[in-house]
Amino acid sequence: MEVISLNYPLDLKKINIQPKVLALGFFDGVHLGHQAVIKQAVAIGQKRNLPVAVMTFDKYPGIVFRQIKDDQFDYLTTLSRKETLLRQLNVDIMYVVNFTSTVGHLAPQEFVDEYLVDLGAKVVVAGFDYTYGPKETANMSTLPSYARQRFDIITIPEQQKYTEKISSSAIRQVLAQGDVDRANDLLGYIYQTEGMVVHGEARGRTLGYPTANIKTTDGERLPAIGIYATEIWIQGRWYPSMTSVGRNVTFGDHRPVTVEVNIFDFHQDIYGENIKLRWNHWLRGEVKFTSAEALVEQLAKDQQNSLAYFNEH
Image 1: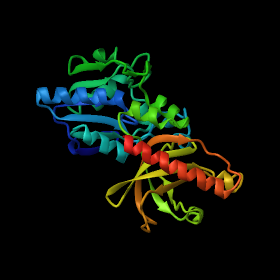
Image 2: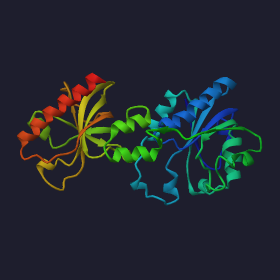
Image 3: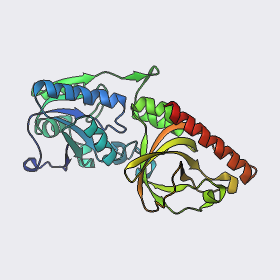
Image 4: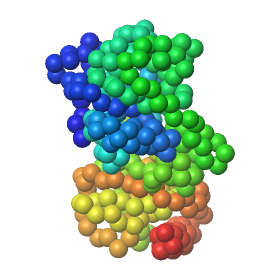
């Protein structure tokens, strides 16, 4: 898959502008709703023998419009993760728009002419709620008037699960509740984050449950405080594990939130390693235990429940 950055004004001499099917959206999470858009674009591309491109943005547009502060928005997928997911969906080109105030204030006709027509779009596919300017005047219903029959338009209807709309905001909400099981159902795959193994307090080793402390990627959303059955990717392999997102309240109050992974049947030194974490299943909330012994007893149960989950799935 070719990845192309789009900076305004576009230099068409340096950009792939061959005829193509173009899927539009921010695609944070590349969830089942997004997948419906992309899979339709891929099917049309195969039928018409055209390459398929996806256009996304390098940042959440609401940050540029000051609807939310940069440090208050956590992404479901970093750009690199989004790239991986789009490649798995057989996308040929990933356009990444450098979303600035200038781009955000383009008139709808300018956006259509410069970002759709000039890039070679012959078919445009987007969700029913996609906008490219003020939602009252720049929506999928008004797109034909701007397209002027220069490309075909396919609108994908709302996708639902559990009788609710599948959306990035809905997934963020259930992650904030720790419900990774439901988030995974809405995503269509197991939620994943990245990070690096760093030194921690090494308390887990003294308890018989050594943990890898993870410095998570900035701007990437974590599930809520709690204990989870997880898988960790280290040196080219996935290992079953259990992960704590919490403040280690048993050992004191007002502690910072940490991410600590106990990897089953693993005894290597991995400080400094870049890792990936799959959040498979919610086990329980964080509990303040009366003693280290009570904590160790619970950790044994957590490990047993994690292994039972992996054996079943």
